[in-house]
Length: 309
Length: 309
Image (cartoon, rainbow over all chains, first blue to last red):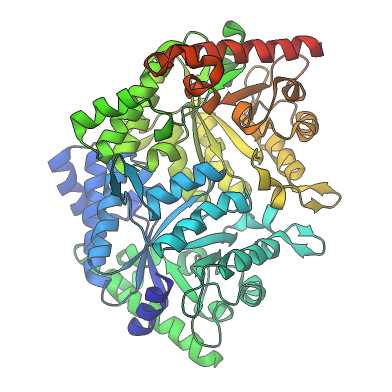
């Protein structure tokens, strides 16, 4: 799957992932109204609004981008109906040949991580039958439990040719509270990065490993160091746009081959119609506003990478 | 909710939580067969088997224990139908007046943690209506992202009188890989424990905080230190039984008031009928075997606490 990701990034010339994190505030009035008319102001109604919103954004951007990253929390908050909208979104994006990164941040002791891995990127057996329940291509994983919490995910990746992005240095303001603490002269995130490189060495695609890392755009200097610690790991970079990361900050996350990173934007793309510069589209054409925002992001990153060469 | 937990522990005289982590291997043949006859060898069939299995265990143990802890991964691995069985289990246990600790180990950046908190222990609004989607009483939370990843959970706890158990020192063999690393002379888990105490100070029940910690039974010496660092935090102790923790190891997790800890056993209780000492019950009476295992666990812990007085 990492080889397919590389190929799709090269084909679209866009190291970009659209974060499908549909907060209700982002969903235009008319979409909510239609959904509530059909299902009432229920969890099912919210799920239908999310699904219709996602579908329109995917339809307007899928030819420009290699991948999407649905944040499962935004679906899980609406219980079972919300998770059904997550499932529908994953299925639809895969049908559109987009790579799906499930932002699930799971992680537990060995046997429990194995269950999460089976459900999201692997196979479960029921009697004599096998199923791929959620069926994402990549998922994000929390490393706090150490190797035996991560290995079951890596094992599934090897078997199913799927991929992981392990949290190394997250984009949020207080990520430093534990992640930056100094251990034997180096911050914790570097030690986690070393482990990601080790775990990944055993799961190589053509030029990159199936096991990547999450490093926030909001910490470009740390990205520079982590890029060197994990040369064969793709870095999923959240925090661009709404969280404050800029195109020029992103250069250090890439390798000299122009690859090695994929930058996520969620609100900046999916709620573009609410920004002044895309207001002309109006809520009725929010999908087109998202498309314009993807094109602008692509230009911003392309320019930054060019300037750095 | 922490006050209710204390009250129920005192009433049952059992600082015990039954881990409802139904691996398919644990579920007796006849339960699987009935479920597959009704739903086929499908995800729905697996979910039905899980639900029938849980129901029988709950029916046979609910008067002896204060709480259950369903591990969501064991349900999530079967996709949407699996999560429906999780929801049914939560609802049923709450109807039986058991406290439900959702072992979900979620944790993300602020706005995303807020969505998880709303979905599991809080309220979501859809138009003019409010819902409590999953409706657990407590959930487990991963602290790797720091304060702004935990605060949204704590805020919901305060508002809804629910509770958290934050991962501090996990029970698995490689938990030390990051958690034991020394920072300014003390291991990371102690720094996390300090934070748990701080976060918890702001959310106090009568004698304990709404914000507790997870510390593995497999590390009793560390439990002793963490008990002192977090005197007002309840400790959820996994790793008893199948993972190797013994009654005598648990003494240090309790305070002098005989409270402050709740010990989880999963496999040891729910798959008790597979152990030699409970084999006489047979797979046909697995619920009774679980009841006997709860009684034995209660005696083991009671004895250890008595001996320590």
